[in-house]
Amino acid sequence: MSERIYGLLGRTLGHSWSVPIHAAAGNDAYRLIELEPRELPCFLSRPDIGGLNITIPYKRDVMSLCDVIDPAARDIGSVNTIVRRDGKLYAWNTDIIGFLYMADLAEVDLKDRKVVILGNGGTSLTAQAAARAAGAREIAVITRSGPDNYETLSRHADGEIVVNTTPVGMYPSNSEAAVDLTCFPACQGVLDVVYNPRRTALLLQAEALGLPCSDGLPMLVAQAMAAEELFFNRSIDSAETRRILALLRQKMENIVLIGMPGCGKSTVGAALAELTGREAVDLDAEIIKGAVKSIPTIFAEDGEPAFRALERDAAARFGAKSGKIIICGGGIVKDAENYGFLRQNGRIYQLYRAIEALPTAGRPLSQGADLAAMAAEREPLYHRFRDVGIDNNGSAADTAAAIWRDFCADSDSQRTEPEHAGREGTGDLRS
Image (cartoon, rainbow, N blue to C red; front, side, top):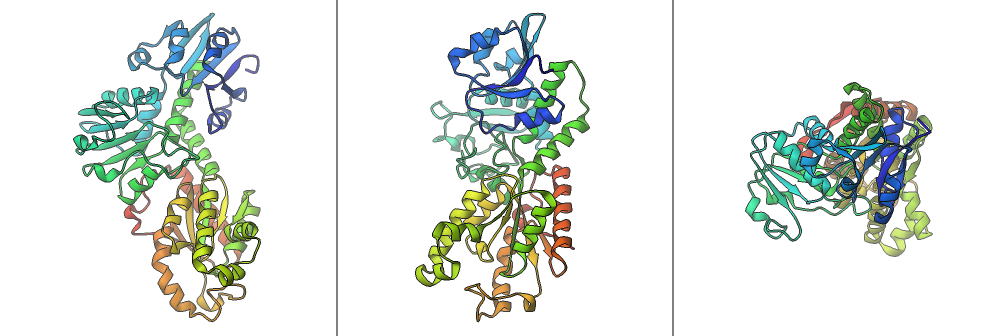
């Protein structure tokens, strides 16, 4: 396998998760191949090409350099998989397999629905073909300058499925969204091909509206498995696709800890770091490092609004990362904007501890405060943010183990729609 070239061909690939996906499928030779347009002909003439995936912006450009193109890929108008066989380059589009897998996993039904597709690049062509194959009633393609554009969305207010095929919302521009879903009052499902972050601003809005939705990671994994089958002329069981998807979900998502000051977030975070090998990031510690002063000093000299602004910046910066344990200050829920920052890549756990067991030393808002009243005031906010509540009146090790069990089970579940639509309910774990 190492004697031939396998990899993802594109122009800028720093955000890609393709290498770990193919490695999990046993292809250790797979790598990222960044080329400029002028380099494509020379590279694709190499006799040692084994198999390539093609991504933005080359899904259409490489077609003229291929010898044999699968009819379905030719109909779509773009390819994403190339294999050299008997000296010839054969091309397919496995993205359509991935797209339909993503929709099916999210229980987003395209049949007899009006599908509104954002963007007109190679992935848009795939989404259009998939929607036709699934029996969509009508397909509208929204572009920046065409007759159907973002200024004329009202023409398609009856859209029932919204699909984003643009890079809008992709890391590092996490807070951007291509459209406001309230423009589509009949919307019944949302698909976003972006997979970093896990939940784009578009998907966070879909969750808030209680709509079934999915990011693009299931599509990425499913198309990669279909490509692996073509690379090596083998069959891959669907269970293997789900295994690799769960593995990537677990690796990418953050564990976020919230709760009252003194409820044990730092101690549990340290126990989780020891248990999982993940880096634990304490947002308060990061604020202190950046401000070069203690939190009580920030409150005394600059006031609570200044501290909350620093906290918001820290939540935005670290919430955009992947695979971390994020330990939040007790008041982070007071700013609703922090929810999106933490939820975009994270599963959020609220820790509970008896009020009488909460320490107050070094905590500006806890000293001399009525903690019971503070807890009553903040509980609805914690409830709004959290995915799961967990009792931390026992040992930190037991709490960490309970969180990790839930986190792994959630990754395995492949749930793509909101766990509690509109965030009205919550789960509770007892350590």
